[in-house]
Image (cartoon, rainbow, N blue to C red):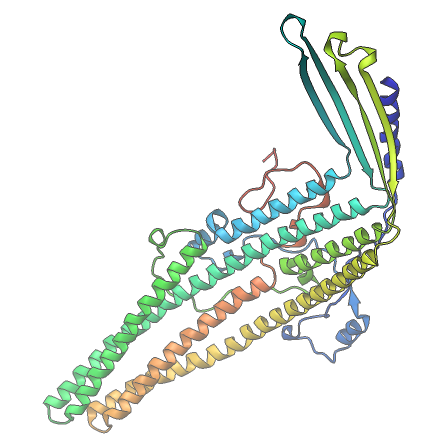
Length: 505
């Protein structure tokens, strides 16, 4: 048996030398067109620098060490918002699902790696048989201790291509975790800002209810003095009830958005409360950096790019199917009657074999599989480039929104200021008897409309800031993805946020 073990050990040592060839294309990141600057950032398309950058065409994205990291929502300087968003990593179920998918992907990497190693099976057995009966009967006991090993050599890299493909898919799932987290965080922030808008709107409507009640009292005084019609009093009272109804409706909006936040942070609505506070006057400024950084800062771009590599490696798997397979197998052990001594030389046996196989005819199945893999790769490349284009468009849209909405808010605030002056003047004229009440009603209605519009524009500006930060990737970048060595090394436990928990932590 010693000779058999030596022979098999020699095969094990030489097999890695035989498995050095990897067929199929080596992956390289697809090129994408990267603009020189953002159009909404003030760059002129006819400038020499922009024209020169356009002539360069496509370029490959590279990670940038200067990318900012951190909790992006802290730019709003709101402790309540900070507390709520931090709860996303604790109990959000969509994020937990994404983390579970990533853990599954890591297990698939380990499963693919197992194909690189031999399979060893131990098969012990014992048999007891008898013949005859009574004192003349005989009983025989036989036992066997058999070990079997087989190893399919990865001579042409099909298994290694599969491992690389699964590793890329795992990285894609890791990017999905980041994308899910960022999306949920942005939703929490947007819903929170809507709650703050509702608080500001509630205050505006409540103030107008009080102002309209004062106006109604003026009409009653004018009617008592005989200088106003009864219709003026009824119209003023109608105004009070109309605005009061709108103020009541805002309470429902607030409750619904608070409950939406509770769902996003994975808590029952009864456990979540948000103190009353209005929305701020201006959103924080958002630095956008250069367009090339966007390719490293958005998790959806990284996700799409990892899917490209996964499909590229599958082309190699399809190419490897055209080459022969070689399997080394060995068997050895002891088998026989125990009365003769189970481990005696007569009961020992062994065998070592090497076999190969090659498909001679398959009706074009392997060629079709290769063409399918190549077509799927082209589709993933197109998807990757489309995701990049959509990312640039989203950033441009939100930059435009912040700029234009800022101009709109300035004009709207001016309209509010003029409307207040108009109400004050028309009320004084109505008291003096030089103006009818219809003019007062029109001025007051216009003031309410302008105040509501001003708040809506302010909410849109804050929401655009959140959306722009999300479009820029928040505080994420591609360095946050697990490396190949992490995925192919010992499996580490994963926390709720999808990060590996290392022993020194």
